[in-house]
Structure formats: C-alpha cells, structure tokens
Length: 358
Image (tube, rainbow, N blue to C red):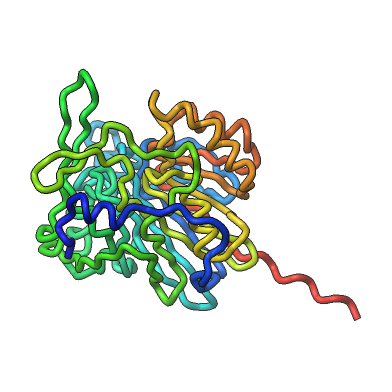
C-alpha cells in the first residue's frame, strides 16, 4: 500500500522533465479497434447528432422508464450528467476484446444509472483505472459494486490517491475534499494495485502512464490545492497521482484519455508519445482543466500546442471549460468534437494498402 506520503515521498515521486525520445520505448501492442463510451461527463444532450467517430445516446435510442403522470405510464429520461468523468474503453485485436473502466464519476449512483440505461455489460469489465484521487473521478465505486454484486475487480491507482487534500483559496472558506478509503474499496470488491510507474494492461493493449513528466513552460498544476503531510498542510499543485490511459490504434496513432488533465493536457499528450516512441497523436479525450480565471491565460498556448500536434479527433470534456472548448472548436474545426454523456467513439485501424495490380 501507500508509503505514507510526506514531503520526502512527494519529492521522490515528483515528475522530472525529460527531453528527446525514451531510451526504451514501451512496447504498446497496436489494436484493430478501440471504442470509448463516455459513462459520465458534465453534460448530456438528448438531441445531439452523431459527429465524426462519435455515436450519440439520443433520447429515442434509450429505454423508457416508469412515469405515472403520462398516459401510457412511461417516459424517456435520457442520461444523468454531473461534474465528473468516467469512460468505458473496449479494445479489439483480431477476435479478442478487452474492456477497462477509466474513472467512475462523482456520485455513488450516476455511473450505475447510466450503465443500466445504456445496457452496458458490467461483467465484461476486467479492470478499473483511476486517473487520480479527486472525488469527481472516484465517487461511483459503490454503484459499480452494486451492479456487479460485489464481485472482485482489480483497481489500479497511484499510491498518492489516498492523500488528504483541500482547497485553500484566499478570502474563501477552506474546502477539505473527501478522501478515498482503501479499506472501503476492498470491502466493495476492488483489489487495489498501486503503481507509480507506467504499466501495461489487458495483454499489453492498454498503457497506464503513471506519473507524467512536466515539460511545458505554462502548465503549472492546480493553484491553492494543498495536501496534508505529517499533520500539516502543504502546497500540492502538481497532483502527482494524475495518470492517463493510452491505446495505440494500428496505422493511426495513439488514443489518449485524461481524467482532469492536472498534469497538463499538453504534457500528457507529449508524455504518451514519448513513452511509446510514437510520433502520431490520433485522438485525445477527457478533462483538460482549463476552466476558471487561473487557467484562462494558458488556453492559447494549449490550443497552439494541440494545433501543432494535429490530432484527428479532439474531445475536450469535463473540466475543460466552455471558453477553451470554443477556442479548440475555432482553431481545430475538423478535429473538435463536443462531448455528451453516452457518446461512443469508435477508432479503427487504418485500412491495409490496396495490393498493386498485376
């Protein structure tokens, strides 16, 4: 389990910047297809049309529920949206598929409600990955455990997810965040696996980055965020436990999922490319954490960096904020896709080149 934290542990785990390509790139096995289904995000739009690789969960595509105020006793409730993020990731290589859950949203029941309405087979989930310890990503374990009747699942986390944390914003009341309990998670059927380093899951088809190198000049973490070490509160802007999920689609490049992007969305994208020795970012989805006055100054350099990375698909969701989303939409109109709860994104391998005529 965790080594107890403290300033020394934080220093040992602090990301180091890195230049150039990795000496020994991680051999991430390419897949033929990856499907990312968003089970929780900040918004749901029951009328949104399909766009690019995104297939929407419109109202007319979802089951009805009992509602006695209507003549036939049924209605179409759509899906639950909340300030949180969760995505189901299914990879296929040949005839073999694997499924992993990335984050769980903020409320005990939101993820579970959406999974049931979408007809998700939760028994197919082989592992859960937690991007970091904040409540908007770690709140849905109880509902998931209920759907699975407490049956065991491995849960991979960074050791610092158990840290006690708070926001200490000047002239505002201090807000101490809920702290994850490893004992409670294990009692709900989750087998906790702690890793600081990158790790491969599901036959080498899914990479969890572990700690992310901080290499940009403008991504400095979360201001006014503190952690308690040895009984005292200390600045904790880096949120070292932030990690991302990476899949390589054959002939296309990397698909990267972020939770909140506290490590910096650009840092995460560059780190994933460096870890795998890949030169192509095909798609990036998840929270980029560019909302609020503290982050608005870095919207432009972030947008510029992604314009240079030139992903085919960009889905800045959750905590990205509307101002940043508008800038991404304007700067990368062919790549930008607005997210909504229930959307499934399918990324398929590039077709094999046609054989030359004889």
